[in-house]
Amino acid sequence: MSGKGSVERELRIAVIDKNPLRAAVLEDGLREARHVSVVRIDDTAGLLDRLRELDPDVILIDLESPSRDVLEQMFEVSRTVARPIAMFVDHSDTAMIEAAIDAGVSAYIVDGLRKERIKAILDTTISRFNAFAKLKDELARTKSQLEDRKIIDRAKALVMRARSVSEDEAYALMRKAAMNENKKIVDIARSIITAAELLR
Amino acid sequence: MTKRLRIGYMPLTDAALLHVAAARGFAAAQGLELDLVRETSWANVRDKLAIGHFDAAHLLAPAAIASAIGIGHMDVPFVAPLALGLNGNAVTVSLPLYEALRKEALGDLADPRITATALARVVAKRRATGQDPLTFGHVFPFSTHHYQLRLWLRAGGIAADEDIRLIVVPPPFMIETLRKGQVDGFCVGAPWSSLAVAAGVGVIVHTGVDLVRNCPEKVLAFRADFAETRAEEVHALATAIHDASLWAADAASKPELVSLLAAVADYGVTTDTIAHILSADVQRTGSPVATMGLRLDPKAIVADGSHALWLYAHMVAAGQASFDPGLADAAVAVYRPDLGPPGGSPADVPETFDSILFSPDDISTYLGKLVSAGRHEPSW
Image (tube, rainbow over all chains, first blue to last red; front, top):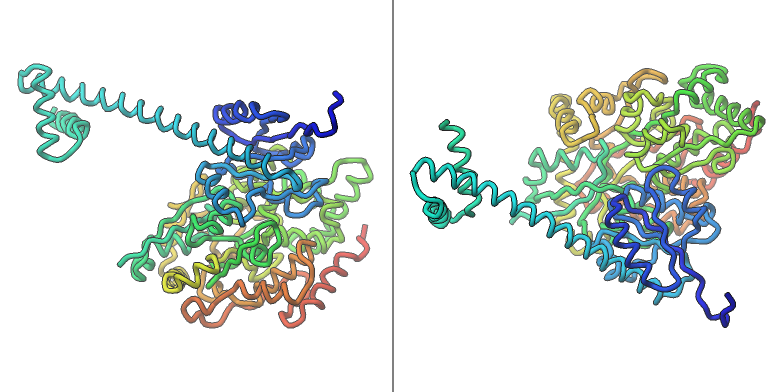
């Protein structure tokens, strides 16, 4: 395709993330940016060779990946790659490092990229990583709420049987105990189950 | 009032004194509560220390120096009131490579000169038959593991990066890459070599002390500005580590030390493994469980400037830093024993197997000898 010479070369972004779900969320987000190609790679053996083959402009890596140390070798000196690589967020940009580290991601970029393009990519990455973390949190919360529900139901059944009361009355008794002891109702429910098991 | 310090560490046996200081009350006695945070990479430890997520860290001494002298793309001054130990590494090779070394060796395999020459012959044969060069793993560009491999290769006249590829492999991946033949050997800190042997995928050909006696390893690193503004806490933590070291060096503490370190370790590390890692009674090559001579005693944790200089010399020899008296001074300035309690006399300067004596007063002679030692004609 013949442009006017100002068309930007397609940016190659390598994503190293063991979590396929998060990597997919990130890929989707980055693809929306123009002139960008995203490749996901495995974080285990042969990483350096794979990166050399790909020759990415930007490398995004999960902060929990032990392979961060492998990347350090890549940008230690330029002898292993054709072009020098630098961590984008140089130390002067502490706020950006903080944001990236809080989100759980680290970025490495090839020298000479336009700063505003990198910033856009990193912003997308950070917001995607945060969105994913939120999603995971919500999932965990829903799951624990569901489990709490089950525990409370079991305790309720025990109280109903022991005291010969209705379901509503059993729940009211448990709630009152929780308020008196300044505890959560699920904690009271757990004690009831434990006690019932001990006294069986 | 108790001060809380957040400290990053890597799950290696030589994070020992941090665990001891926290678990045995030495930190509490100094009014400190230690929040020990396990990390997955040295790059994480360094970066989180640099931006203040950690107050202190268990950090590779050469990584702290590299950052302080501005090489390796990180330019943050770190300081270390003390080291966290000496020794603890080992060079492990795959079973096929060990077999090949045994066939080529003209003498005792316990002698690194013999094995290095044997390795050179293996390298030459592979080249003659058009096979890929051998690959060795180490843990970080700025690590003694890297420099120990280079020292060993040099003794056989083997050119690192040309005759043999050196790559960084994260310790949790070491055993698997060795099993799959993606590396032919590696130099790694305890307990990983012991685990590779236990997994039946490798043989320890040399322990770190076979190559370098009193080899510097990790330091207790702080950001220089933190050390200045919170000098009391730095002093308190250094004191707690020093007390932990006194306790750890006492023979009576040994059983408790061993079980504490096994308890905080993972990946199936047993008390036996830990006992072997700490044993000074170094067994020779090829034994099923090698002892590593990891030292945690008070002499071994003195942040002695000569150790920093030795590391700097090996950075220069590895082509990572240029030789410049200013950089040498900057490297020495990372070690700040004045920030900690009076530490007494340090351990001797590191001593390499190849009889090239290191003198802190004359690095250039040392470097000249190191480089020319690597240039001799291989004897195949």
